[in-house]
Image 1 (tube, rainbow, N blue to C red):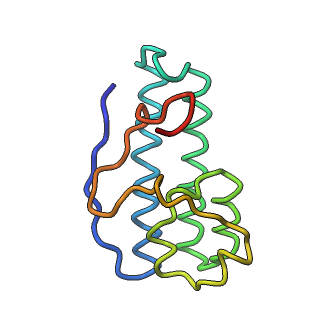
Image 2 (image 1 turned 30 degrees about the vertical axis):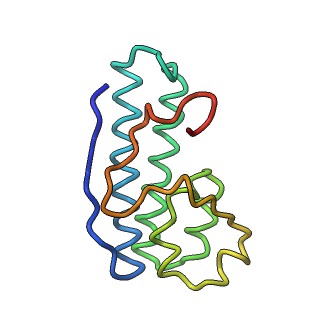
Amino acid sequence: MWLAYVEYKSAYNLVSAVENLAQHLRHLQFDAEHEAVYGMDQFYNEEECTKIAKNYEKGVEACNLYLHTSDLTSFLETIKELGLTQFLEEVEKFAPKNIFKRLKINFNKKHFVKKNRFIQPLNSYYKNGIR
């Protein structure tokens, strides 16, 4: 599988953190679409890859909507509904602290992608759970 590796730029405010998240999700979407077309069905079948790619695409749309409207609450609610809260580490640093408690978004820190590290490829998430 071809993997899109990208190094992050450091976020300096909430807007740049959401821009980084959108970039991250775009690359993961590309990986999922590539796996759906050219994959060997080792980790996910074609339907699962397509579903994951659509999920990432909706996440990118949510990021773009936030960048145009600055409505943080609806952005975080959408990301929570999509199940993409593990990618919110940088956003958490710059967002008001009480908003995550109010929306009941819990973080499992060990699944976060560290800043200035490579993006976790799609095939590193096994069917039986995240390693």
